[in-house]
Length: 368
Image 1 (cartoon, rainbow, N blue to C red):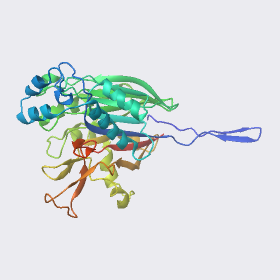
Image 2: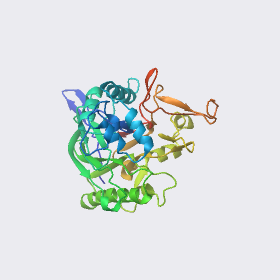
Image 3: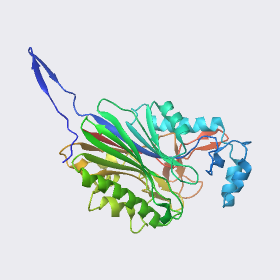
Image 4: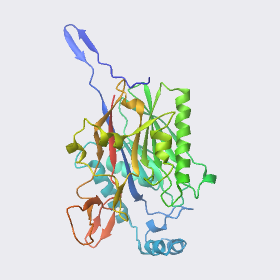
């Protein structure tokens, strides 16, 4: 059994005793930051909405959209340097969570390119980051920002593509970043942004199957030396059948996973007071008035076996920054007791910018 081992050593030298530090705890956060773009057009990408007025080709680019609503939205959006900086500031404000320590690992979805991720990394204080270069038509990718320590070292990056011949349209690649933890063990963090609900469930099944094959291959070759954490926006809801997450991960016969949020909410040792302190979900589907479980942290079940590393399940979190919320009214215009406080997407108003994203971030702590 692969283990992140904490050795507690007691040494006696000339009557003096020394002990190694206790268990080290690190946090992984995942967040769909909703359209984090710079304002430079990238060739072959439909990123015209996120360019400034006067950018060569913007009008023609906006008019190339298939849906008139998106044409109009693109033409009226002036994505200036000020807009970019304000979006970065809003994201940074949420990740910092009113003074809390930065997550050791920050996994992001809906980010455009290396340029904009680099700007965010510098603003937050991350020294390193990785990003995919997939075939998504708008040019959005997934990324992972991280800070190394003596016990948490970068090992390598891999990018896993999904066979586009079996999809309705190209989708984002899956990012895998490997770390050596505690000087002994490999941890793979997989960042996902599967095809949206506008695509058939078969596309999300293909993404799930592709990732499952990667992990099964690792498990077959070195089952005692590798742990896996799968995070991101899976775009899977309760109506998807077969359910891609359940079929290939939670109920998998090869490398089974737990859904961290599910385990947190059903745990008998975590009080209802603690559970009720966090939102009911990370994404609110306004049309149906329900919370959707699109965002997930899936954890290799061996991380729950208490024989090596431990998941600090009680510290699972869906973070709602108090300044990044809006009221969803059951009756429009009225605020009722049953109204929900939901994510406020980043928007420009007459009083300035509000919000950060239409998703809340979620995080989980690991102890080894």
